[in-house]
Structure formats: structure tokens, C-alpha cells
Amino acid sequence: EVGAPGEAALAARSAAEARAIFHDLGDWRMEASALLALSRLQRRHLGAPGDNSTAEVLGEFAGDAARTAGLAQGLCARLGDEHGEAEALHAAAEAHAAHGALQDCLRATEEALDLYIGLKDKRMEARELLFMAAWNLESRRPEAAVADAEDAMEIFRDLQSPHEAEAC
Image 1 (tube, helix red, strand yellow):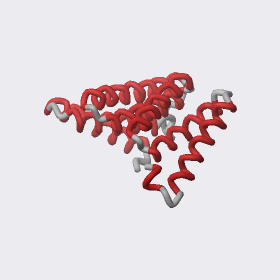
Image 2 (spheres, helix red, strand yellow; image 1 turned 45 degrees about the vertical axis):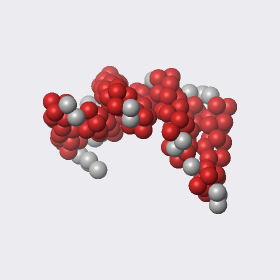
Image 3 (cartoon, one colour; image 1 turned 45 degrees about the horizontal axis):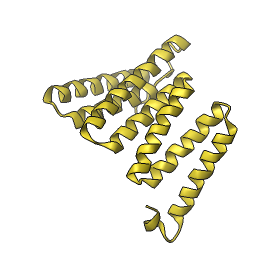
Image 4 (cartoon, one colour; image 1 turned 60 degrees about the vertical axis):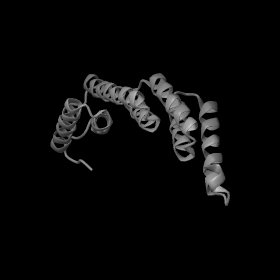
């Protein structure tokens, strides 16, 4: 875990350098991984102590995180890596949420959810539903939030049942 603002900047530079190296090598899978790491760093350190945390600067960092996640998503889509694509969509959703762009956040989360459903990854499907519930609540859509939370609970119950293998 990166702690101090200087460590975050160093980690972000390292991730950007790794992305450039993998890009030059034509290794799209590793480039996508580096982009996803960079996006998470950009989002995680919005407003970290010592940062200039005005709304404009925070919005710029959140926008950078969303754009970086979008680049990772594009590479994963070209590779046919639906799991990586869903993770990139989730990272973009978190960046949009950090910026207060909840409609963009929910759209990206729904796309990630659709991918996890297609992959039959029940745990990740439930995770996306929980995030959707929180973001729907923040968007003042309590009925949608409750429905998403109930769907997630049902999946988690199924995963805990003696028939877990059937649920997966």
C-alpha cells in the first residue's frame, strides 16, 4: 500500500513507465495491467494529505483515473479478456463516483455487471451489485439501491449454501 503523497507520485510514475515499456514491446496484456494499476493509484490518492484538493484538481485526477481505466478497458476488449475489461470498468466507475459523476459511474458499473454475469462469476456479480446499491443510494434512488442489495444478498446466500458448486 502506498502511503505518503510522494510515494503515490513515485508509484504512479513507475506504473506509467511500465505501461510505456509494455506498449513498446507490444505486450497488450501487461500494458492493460499497468494502466489498471495507474488508474487505481490516480483514484486512490485523490485528495491525499498534502495534495491540492480543490474541486477542480480532484475532478482532474478523477478524470485522469477514468480515462486511464478506459484505455485499460479498450486493451482488454481487444484481447478478449472480459474479466480484465470488467475490472477496468469498475475502476472507471470508482473514478466517476469520486468526481460525483454518478450517472457515468452507474453506467460503467452496469457494463461491468453484464460482463460478470456473462462470465458466470457470481462473487464479482454480487460485488458489482453492492457497489450499484451504494451508488444508487447516493444518486437518491433508494428503490434501485434496495433491489441491488437484495440481489447481492441472494447471490451471497447461494454461494454459502451446500450447493455452492451449482451456484458458481
